[in-house]
Every structure is written in structure tokens, then in C-alpha cells.
Image (cartoon, rainbow, N blue to C red):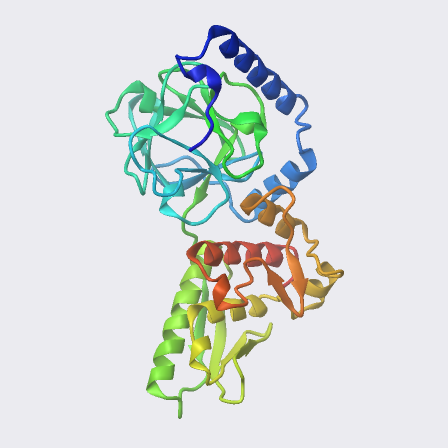
Length: 359
């Protein structure tokens, strides 16, 4: 669970409460004075949001709610879906604990309901620093939110009961950064964007030929490619493209190139979605183009969107390593790298590289 601000607990003495409030105010002022807090990192992340996670206009629907400062999203800590569970920020994982359903209410307000928990985003009280948590929805004012438009589809999200805005404490760039409420101000740590939970990419695939290919191989590769394309298309708005897939017993594992050709070998342990997604990365220039090698000279990826994306997903100092025509983390180079989060982030990183000119 998160460490919440000390003055929230009634058992704490008044002096501690006053000191804690003062520290918060100082931190807020420091983080918003001229927007100097990690300004270069923040600027790159904002650019990445606008390029990869296109901010959406306010509407009924299901979204990730992403902070402008950190490019991380509002998250219910994994598996903790009970009443009074505090929310925090976390790098995107694709999980339903990061997805929120917005429904318009009367008076221009919205309810914000967690997809996984089916509980409402709730202001615990009316104070600066007041906790933001999830609770069963009852329609009370502390579960109603106004989205104040700030331009370019950024919003300040203000609670109806308290009149205070959702606030990323201290402009944190870290996973687990505290989200509470605070009096409205112009800082980017109170600015949020709505991000699609599913894009509409148009990458597809076809067999070059299935003549002589064993039926079980056709089934495995077909399932792998269908799954891989679905994940790529859900993760980004790829332009229409058809990849050409073949079976070649002379290929030890699998291989691909930037012209869109993918070949699977006879080793059945590579006829899976992890391999298919990895090879699709090569089709989008990973290890294949002059753009890739220009941006990976020295073993660390240097493209602006790629750097911004990995630092939004992980930490403010994370980098993408590169070598041998591959990248990590999230390159899906080995089965040990596979996870739902890894697959989700793989698509985001490859898309960022695409926008950097790798493909």
C-alpha cells in the first residue's frame, strides 16, 4: 500500500500535521514554479504521449487516464480491489486495473469506474492532500468529477464535493507515485489525458503458401500470427500493411526482414505468439535499417520517442539497450521475457521506434 500523507490520520498530533502540510505545499510550489522539475524528461514524455498515445476528447467510454508530467496512468495496485483501496500511478501494463469507464452524469460531471474493480474513483474527504481511492458507487458528490478542458485534449479533473483537482504528488516520475487531491493550480502534475485502451491498427498477414506444410504447423503459426497482429493493432494505429509468412525447415528458429517477410522454422517451440511479435519488430525496422543502426550506435537506443516511452513505462533513468540487431527490455527475444505486460510494452516501444524513423 502507498504511504499517504501524515496529516490524514486523526491520531497524529497537530504539529506533525502542520509540518506535513507545509512540506506538501513547498513541494507543489517547487514542482510547478516555471515547470522546472525534470523539465527535459517531462517534455520528451509529453511529446511521446502526443505521438504514440494520442490524447482523446472527453466522452463516455473506457480509457487509461495518463498524467502529463509522468506519462504514467492511474492504477489500482494489483489485486487490491476492495473498498477504500488507494490509487497511485504506474507505467502502462495494459491491465484492466488501469482502465476506467467514464459515464456522463447531470450537470457536466462524470463517474469514473474501474474496469477490474467495478468501483468508483472517490475523494475520501475535502482536504488538500485528501486520499483518492475506490469505493462502491453510490452517486454521491465525492464520486463525481468535472473535466476542465485545458486545450489539446488535456484536462484538470475536479471533484464535485471538494472542489479540488486530481494531483500527482510532488510531480513524481516514479511507479507508485501518490495521487491525491489538491487545490487547482496550473502545474502539469494536475493535467491529465484520456488514452485509448484499444487502437485500430491495420497490420495483417497472409501465408505465401501452405503447400506441404503439416496441418499442426499451420495451426500453430496461424494462431501465433493472428494473436500477434491483434496485439499490435490494439496497441497502436499502424497503417495498413500485409506481412507475408512462410514455413521454411531450413530456418533454425524464425527470421524476418523489413520488407514484411517472416519465416518460421521447424522448431515447434518457436511457433508461438512471442516469436511472431518479436519477428514483427524486425518487419518494422528493428535490426534492419540504417535508421535503426544510426539510433543504436554505442549499444543504447537514442531516439527521442523511444527514450521517452521506456522512461514513462519504467523509471526516469531507464534506457533501451541494443545489440546484434535486437533490443531489450521488451524485445521479446526469449520465452523468459514473455508476459502480458511485456507484450503490451513491446508494441509501445516498437511504435515509438517507428516514429523515430527506424522503419
